[in-house]
Length: 232
Image (cartoon, rainbow, N blue to C red):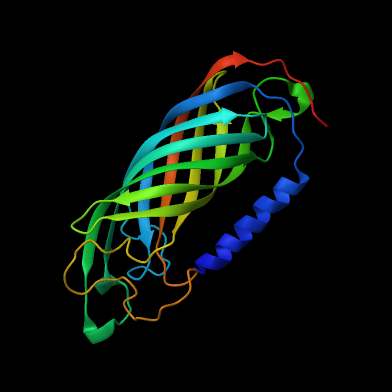
């Protein structure tokens, strides 16, 4: 999988939506809930195989719903990643091999855009109880180990949400988190590691680590339901 190409395509899609979107009414202002799913890593030990050595992940999510289309959200997520160069199919300097396993913790914020006006009310505003959405944002990741990791991540993702009841929403989303370092897969201070193992000193686009989250969520709306109005 060409990760940088995928990011460019998603960014172009989001920018296109930003330029064409119209603001509409808002429903409940706030949501809070939990999410659970899987996490996996992509980097020197996994160049692009989705869900390779996937582990469990979970977290909490909070949304501020500006209107039917736009939301600002925050999340706290916990996950686990593993990797093994013996399974990568690549040759490393001096035929060196390494395995790693670590927990990570993420605090982040995103801007979210719904493709449809999301609500189970106000049919005259062409609302839908089911909508796909996209999101982009920024966050901070900390990972445990003998050698810890702390770094900025940029999440880009797609999802689907459904209003199950008046105040209850369920959702499913897939996202990639781009990191700006190559040592997310380095857990030990000694021996061979995967921090630029070929010593290529490439740009920030290449030779950097990623991780992915696939999450199911359940959220509850709270706050007063606002009187709808259109801003066209």
